[in-house]
Length: 247
Image 1 (spheres, rainbow, N blue to C red):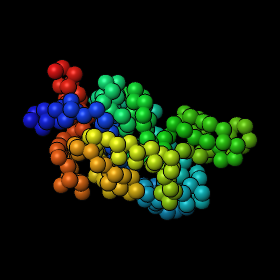
Image 2: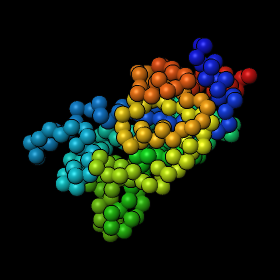
Image 3: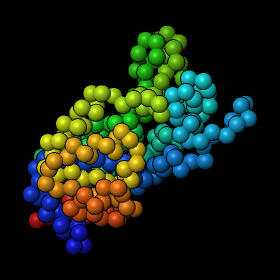
Image 4: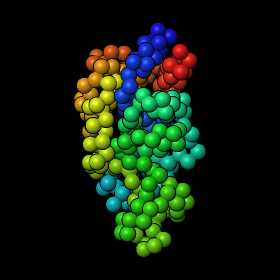
């Protein structure tokens, strides 16, 4: 409880907070990290593919049927609901304290919880565009499509607005995230082991007062942090924000 109280004090004295989160933020919403899947065995190709191969740009171009088979089963969770971490962050934003969420997740749960300023480094399953005419489609359209989704306007292939392996991050999103982190007086890093680059490298831009790390396991940035909490992030954020609102 001592660490929760310390976190609450930091939240109380900070007015430009940024949250940087990874896959661990979504696990309480029953969304597993896709890397934990067994990958994909294709009978047509008679080959086994790793999760990383299955969501690579090369795989998407060469084997679209197999790509969408893996993608629909392992990256879209239409029933998922925001958890206590998402809700606590939305509350902090509503209070005027949290200025931005920078996320590596693609599930849209921060927005579903009410967060307005969200930088989605790896895109979102909720945005899909025709490669030919750029018509927009939601996640439901992709899920319901047989095999590969195609545009109803021009017949072009519909591609998820998700950053695949071998693809670069969106420049405007990176710049927005960097600016938010650089201006923050408090940075909370949660639910990420900080091994996925270039996203993990963004924390080097933080020059503020309080650096907090909340993750179940150790990370490479623990020694730089003022406060490290190795616990469930949904529980920690809920308790800290409840305490903040109470006092």
